[in-house]
Image (cartoon, rainbow, N blue to C red; front, top):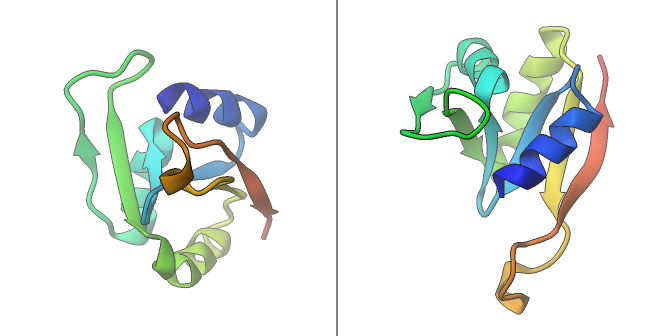
Length: 104
């Protein structure tokens, strides 16, 4: 899953990447630190991360309309990554892709 994240992030390095994981939009690494500060959400840290320090912060997907405007008002470009298939219908990693790119 993190391979998907890093591949998508490399295509939009200047944007905050909201990465859909089940019922949440997650952010990782520097995006997580920035979102935690801007949105007032909890920053957590995983024990291991191949490319970074393992920071993450997220919010429920149904709260996107609450958090997205805050990021835009803060002058951020936001790439929204959604699941492109139903996770119940696959035994593999769910395909994901950028569904929207939002500028201020």
